[in-house]
Image (cartoon, rainbow, N blue to C red; front, side, top):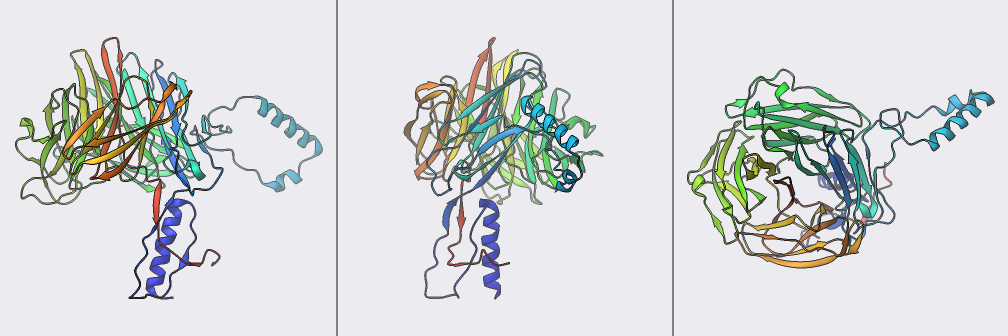
Length: 527
């Protein structure tokens, strides 16, 4: 077998690992006159999601929502999508041990099993874990609620037709205390590398990195912190153990003695994989979740800034060896402008965190921040996030918006309500036509589909369509139909005692479909 054949089989094998299953076939000998076939687009057959422990407040109320869009074909039949408390499963016993037991021992075992079946499962490493949320069918969300500080981290997987596009939303309301506010996040997929610009070790902040391990073997993670002068000294950020099927919160201020208002956090794993997200709490503006930035790139879009934002701060980090000189723009309702606060290019030194206060940059109209190389500047990859505040004085609330990639095929966000949801669509280049589907409600209702046109260089903010006869919450699915790239975000707002609580979730592509090279000869039986 030649090198070309080996390389193609390696590619197909890697894709099989992503989709869960794929037949690997040997390609025919290269024919220079033949036209290469485009790779087939197939739905993934397994997805994993992790939701961190939502709050330490006894006043917290958390709503979890699970959803898979309808309409994906070819993913097989059956399947499941379940979220369960993070806990180590029972250790299987050796069947040979049963042969050594007396009849009396076996009778006691049977009696214990009967008692166990009647009793509710407990959380913990020695308990059988029952699903907290189990999705039954695509197109209809399911929801569940937990109250207080004992809500656990959740881990889950979806298979078969429920896997492509599976998403879960965690929305927590805290009515009082330092963490008061509306805290929302889209549960994350496990990985090995995450960047979080926009965190802080300042005395006014309490930022925790939550590391959740979905696997049955321990993971080891490193956390590195970068301030405006570079790496923050830390003796405890390396080699952090994350036990199997557990979640570990790490307070950033315990990793370093340096207090920095703007910090970039880098989470990587030495062994295993984790889900990572930052919970940020401020003394006077409440708290919210900071999700990881999109992969480092020379250009970035940060969509979903509310029109009534009173303060916006951009935080950027250049993880490579080159400095970045960036042009900062705002894509609003009428077009793209350079705000007066960003008249000069933003210089980002390699390995250092830079920030820019944009003030009330949206001036009453929702928008998105765009960053890219300044005129004559080099194409330097960066990661970025926004800290956004609504309200004034004591009645303020904070949220975070990371840079996010475009929706190439489809993206979904769950837990939309009849009131308080806003969808923003940004077309940074060419105009785009976008289909938006409001799913059936978790308690009833029929889906609604609406199409929007977003002009190039602008942001369109809309009150999304609401399902007919809605009961409960619903999901929004965004699918570009034509035109240029589109970046999307959803804001959810609730007013509590005069405080304009809100949270913003970006909608990156769900990656529910993957490309698989065209093959003919089945090698799946080869060993």
